[in-house]
Length: 262
Image (cartoon, rainbow, N blue to C red; front, side):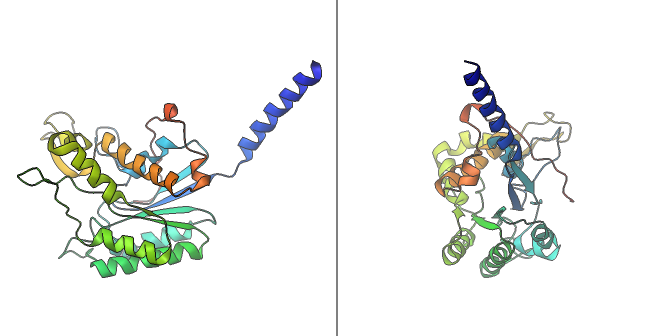
């Protein structure tokens, strides 16, 4: 009996030692405001990258380099991409989602669909050169419906450009455009409002006049977008990440720690 007890104690401590010495799995995020960290409290806006830790155990480390208002072009021009690349370690997953700001014509951050594709290709090459694993995402959809209640796609050629780069370069693609479009259509005009920032006046001190914003996510919307990312991680069988997912009953809203430079 003593031998059995000693053996069980040994197994228990061995398991704890393995867990303690397991190498962390790292995710680096590049993108725009739809996944960036947001200041809290008194701010209802959330990026999906900010809440992505909600779905992982503590062995997954997420560093969110995404910043509001950035396109592939401005992310490069400001040195943000070079900074991210400098921090890539072998085996890191680098998840990349742009498009919202690339499409804004007559601004310095504008990148045509062709330039956007070229920049995504560069990102893939740079990540692989450092031993990282690049993942491309199509941009999450804006909430836009016409007068008849039909969904309106505002991204034009950009999702297809990202899809083409992923196919050509054999990169995992998380098709967030398709997933979020399908969700918005299924929810319809009214029910989809809760995923975005429809804030009544006086609800937040920082927004005394309220806010109606169909681009940026509420916490509910950000959690749903992050869940799509997790679903895609499973679909692509990215096992180092899959085995560190929290069980469904252990999922809780958890934020990244915004320690990166603005």
